[in-house]
Length: 609
Image (tube, rainbow, N blue to C red; front, side):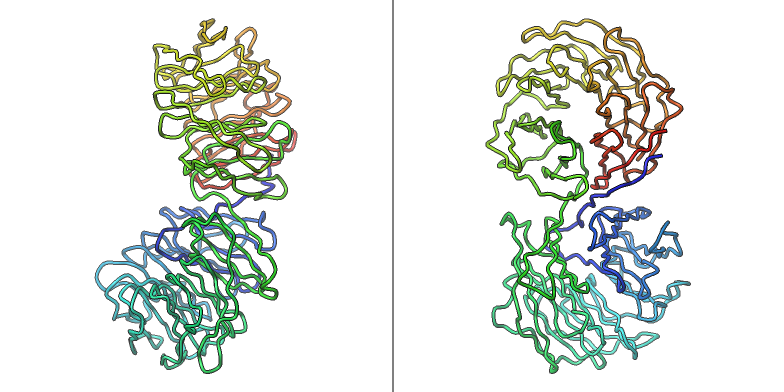
């Protein structure tokens, strides 16, 4: 059976103009963040050790470990909190509907018995504290009129709760049962984050007015501020205390993170400003941070996670990144199959090395959206949602200048002839366009609705699939196509066609969940009854020695068939990607790489049957 060998995690979902809250496990170096409906548990010591929880019905917003590290509470945009096991199978313990709108922050009490959640809702219910096992309320939280961005639970007795939000207020509650004690209006803009120090003696609030204010933890009185020497020049989105409670880390829209020394009397003095290398655009704005043991973690708007060392701030930081959106295609290079390129529709192309993980983003000069993507040794070819095809030369890690070709209508699929990469075949709604280099060699109207195509590696033959489920085989002579045969077997629109590497077979998949392997020479069905998906097939890949074919589908599964055995002796990977599988590629005889809607890339090891 296939085993999961590596996961290249997606990055946290971010939003312009808002901070995100990431959190860590008190005992290990694991951090939690959310992307779409998934909650990601990432091990900072080994970034390939990733676990994903995907049981939320709506996009998740925040997740926290319980104080003993055994449970995780996560919340979503619908106001639901789920409490589940942190280990093994992530068993669901409880689910509560807490607020009527999006939950922006939640915190456990230090004894792990109560949870406070804050966010958006109707009427006055913007904050709720409840018992973790029964869901009963433990207090009344009045005093906020707009969305409550953050809440904090005092980690020592006597318990206190502090909340802050878009009404510029910082509210202080005593309990349990919790009731309103006092309110502070020292900030002049949205208050984005509030955090208690680990010993509970102080708490700090940071705001879009570029200030950080420190309060006394037990009484809630203001004691001081972060120094105005060399302050942040943009909104401060998040703050995190060091484990000894003597320093804080803040991140801001001015693209810097700052470490502050907090004195006994409650004032903050700047210790060091940390900058992350990036593209220089808005994607470098920092929106989240966490001080996790010796790691200083910052998250940028583009999703890049940067790890600084707390004990040695001069040390150059480690960067982890990946995709934030659905990964629509994967490619591995023939010369070095361990080298994987993935592209997501927002225009990001990321390079991964099997065994090492993230190896860098590839910057194109023209960062347009990507719908179709193909890569050969020396160039990549992409098409977006306009009528252009881009051919960009590619050496090592650098893209050269790209040339765009306007083909007159929206491209639906593109295929390269690997042995003569000058030739590319692009399908449009009603026909195909042949490109030689950056010139349109011919535009051919085929007279039927085209949905998928592939061109032979040597450029001598093309197969075009239609909306009607028929496969049309064409011989390529010069710049014209001559129809040689029509194969009828599929009962749905063709979604993908691929030649085997040894050029003796080809495989096709359709929207009616069926795949078929054909013999190329006699054009007979070689492997049939490949009907084990429950939804449309999105992608298909051949193993390097042409002995296996893998299909990926909208039903979240990947199925691997051996060509010489009946389809019933298949290997199935269930739930490979939440939301569907969109990219597949083999990197060696026993490794298949998949990508999907959840923005993750996974490497599966196959054990021969």
